[in-house]
Image (cartoon, rainbow, N blue to C red; front, top):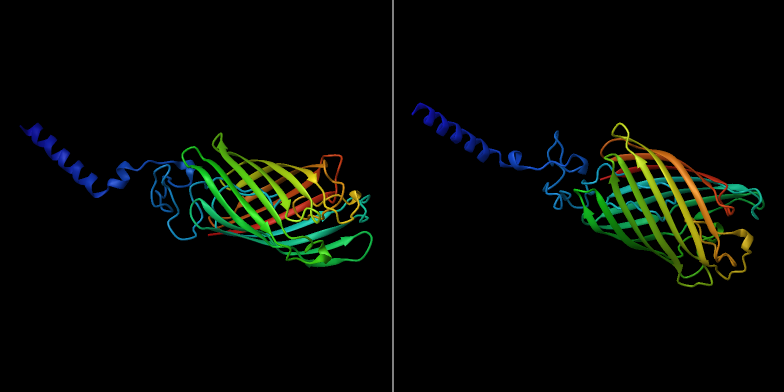
Length: 325
């Protein structure tokens, strides 16, 4: 009789405890998803279900892929597959080959990229703008504003449990910049793109970007495919060594009377050079990116060509600071 009473009392206490805290007793935990963890159970999410984990407010970045880090080279065209709200401050220092028709020299680009997460899948992007200063080896310094490019991207596959993303979108670049820095010619550029992201081996990540840029007026700008392979490894929870390989393949040139020896400007400039169809440019970039907390990242990378063609790229330094909401 006493044993039966004790069992009944124990079951009653357990039921009361479960009734008071049902979430803690039934909540699944996915530490790698950035949604749930032992220290702060699902604080940034409305739900911890592997497919229902979502931001908890308007314009909030997707919190469920917290170990990912975005690409750094080819900064205008390559994308982070996540839906994020952030401002990315970008500095590019590019050295021009001495045997280029511009006679060597260098140029700098100062940019501010803005992204806004409209939902956990849909993002507004404004990934090209800023100010350029070109210092060729022949001729004087050229300064001016570059074109503005904006568009949308959408995450078609968002698998939180397996940390897998498939995203696609487009950008439109009207000719809003200044001719002094090789902008403002033509009727605009359209870029279609896709990106796949996957975490593997717990702290390793692979991103594959690919896209196609085509001008509305094909006589004024060049047409090309591009792709990027990005690999990173998360160390100490905040530091990421990064390796990236970029490939550009031009399918058609412009007809502006520019000589083929000028080449093209990969993802930063589109001259509309004649005779570039069939050209390929392959570059490698190595760098480090770091998380400075929940709302800030920074990174630096060095990029150089490995193909026989170099065009404007003898070597390049990229630096970024990202503030995220």
